Image 1 (cartoon, one colour):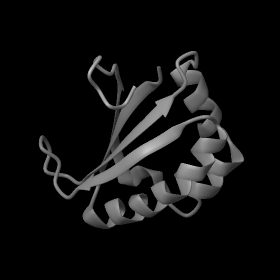
Image 2: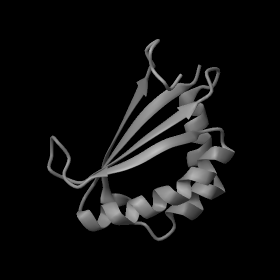
Image 3: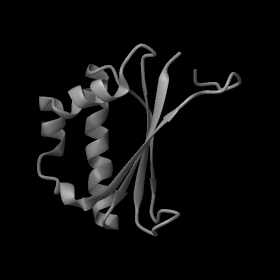
Image 4: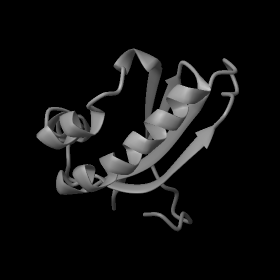
Length: 109
């Protein structure tokens, strides 16, 4: 069974959301090289709590993987640095991570 993680990025502005959406399209192949599968990426123009734009990403790791180690390896990789080139990281005002456990009836195991 895979380990799923929901990642929620809160952006400073609608323009930052568009820019970060483009960056996420670059993240997908780089993350795959590091054993992180992307199942979907969604945007919300105004987040439910803050009214600021958000990007949601559902990713998974193999069951035996240490999620933080796998993610750390990607975040320190040349692929990640190349993806982020030219993006002002201060445009991301918050990141929330939730490890999700699928129920027995879940189509995603």
